Image (tube, rainbow, N blue to C red):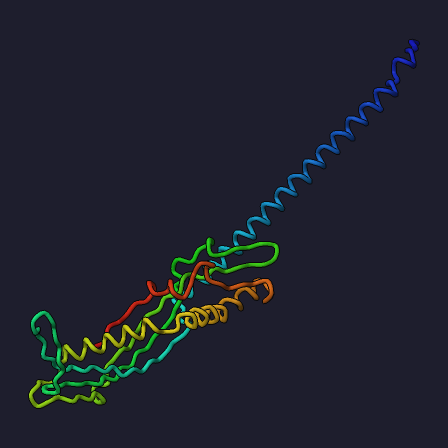
Amino acid sequence: MVYGNREDGCKDPTGILSAVFCLLLLLSFLSACGKGEKNSAAEKASDTVKVDTTALLVRQISNCVRLYTTEYQYHKIVTYSDEPRITGNLGSANFSIPTRLGERKIAIPIDVSVKAYIDFASFSQANIERSDSGIVIVLPDPQIVVTASKIDHAAVRQYIDPLRSRFSDQEMMSFARQGEDSIVRHMDKAAILASAQTGAARILLPMLHRMGYTEHKATISFRHDLTPESLQKNITIQRLQ
């Protein structure tokens, strides 16, 4: 019978402890890696949600295309007096003397409709500003269109001297257009700007509320440097017919 050495069949306790320590260290490392991957995935998912939410908002607002926000009706009577004058010079002095012979006068009533709208066709993520304090929608510049301009021909009044001819249709149209241009120059552009902003807010704020933004965290505004005077270039006139 052969007896082996008992010490040769037993493992060294120090080696076992080392192996256990290494195994625990490996498990801790793998666990940390797993958490890091989960956190990274969560951050990516969060970023995706933000991007998707913004893209969804852009699509919803772009669907509005052309949003009419306000309309004004103007009535104006354009007057013109064609008073003939005798002009000439006497020596070194020029003279111009009015004469009542051949006088012509006309009064032309015109009705002009003015509409303001916001074109969302080019609306993009650049028009959306998001922060921890809320969201700001920067509206495209409002457009103003003069529509339904017409002369009330039945109410036109002319005073024509027997020695003169009546005003032609071309002359009447020219006078009416001058009146139309005067309306455009003097219209209250500040009021139009304010009405356009209010009208847009009525449409857009409910969208933002459905996305979780309260009234205090949602702002609808135009660009900061937009002034009533700068709206002049945004006016389109559909001429009198």
